[in-house]
Image (tube, rainbow, N blue to C red; front, side, top):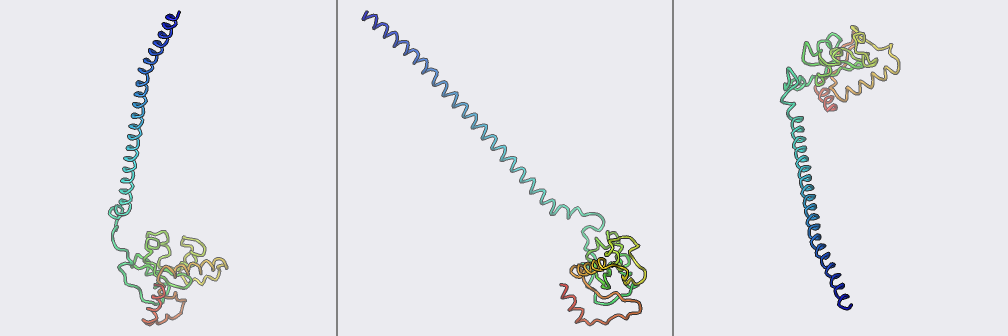
Length: 220
């Protein structure tokens, strides 16, 4: 029985050893699979990161190219006839201060002469540098060479807002007159004031060079 017991014990140990051997065979295989999976995951992550980096670089290059085109390309393309040419204001000398009758003012409509003048509340302004607005093809071209006071006060861009005779604006209400004064201040800030719009029979003032220079220096 002792020997039998010994045989049983040895058999048991042998079985355990075999299982241990099998377990030992399986363990290295599982570790290898885990290592392979990890390497694949690392490779995928590396590939994905590289792809994202390439996409980001391409986007930056495209953005830079677009900005360059916006800044320089449009200048070369131009916007139609006359593109690239200097504006009338850049080629004309600054106008000396003087007063205007309605007939004299109408000569400066941007069509008969390149200079554009208009009057607001009895003041005449040189708006040549705003020719894209007040030139013959501009949205406010109707005011070029005319007294724009009534049209600005009533927000009207029709010929009904223009008068062929001197307009004293006496029929405008308080709100409309306040609007005229606000427009006058805006034009003074942006454009050159060149003189007064004369009433019928009124004589023009004589302006000295010193007054003219002083007036322009205030606007600058």
